[in-house]
Length: 142
Image (cartoon, rainbow, N blue to C red; front, side, top):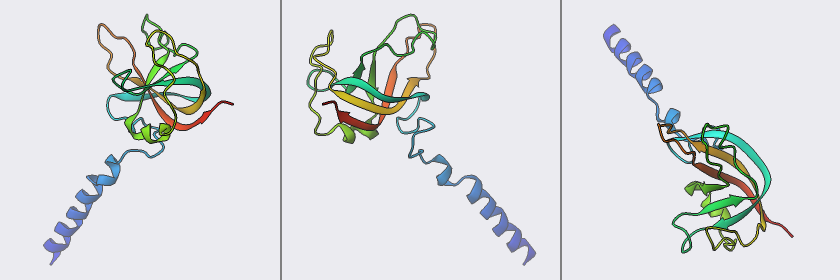
């Protein structure tokens, strides 16, 4: 009987330690799990003007900002103003027409976006930062 109690207790211990709950993504994306590995949280952006691009003009959906993202702080020499949109927040841009048809210059910045800016955590010898955006809120300006 004592042996059975010990084995049940150890089984409960292992269930608690290796629980699936611990590996679930954070619904608020504080740990960047909403975009998957290897992204890490950079900062929160609030009401930034953006243009949207995506298929058929570009391979992936992305947001272009009016200002440069903090690539110099990330240790990369090339500034960027574009962030791909996390697949789990793509539903938030449904119904918003794409405004950025050219890779060189956006047509306009008609949307205001708030959300988590994530940076690629894959630093190597030729590191050039890539950004992703988990959209919490998007609205049309005017």
